[in-house]
Image 1 (cartoon, helix red, strand yellow):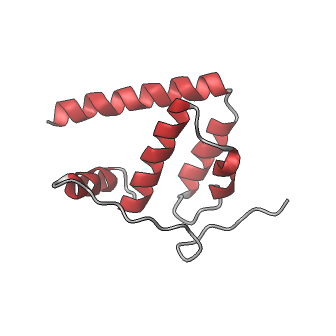
Image 2 (image 1 turned 120 degrees about the vertical axis):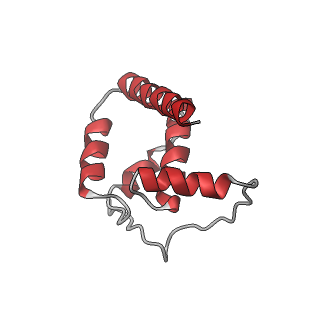
Length: 106
């Protein structure tokens, strides 16, 4: 089966209305993670959906995404080698650490 190639021209687009101040908060977090705002939003959506167990197998198609750095691709490949239970535990731990860091910054 041939893998789909992701590009900004072929990607689905969706307009989102953000509450006041959220755009700036997303921009700050994205900058801290050395990502674009788009990449930050996608990463957080995927994280949330993974935690809920509702992320489908189509994530496999995005490994070749030009928005992923070499380091991010390596991490993603290693993450996929974990069992679903290990993936969920890791995502929960990361989410908890992110919440704690956000509380410290506030």
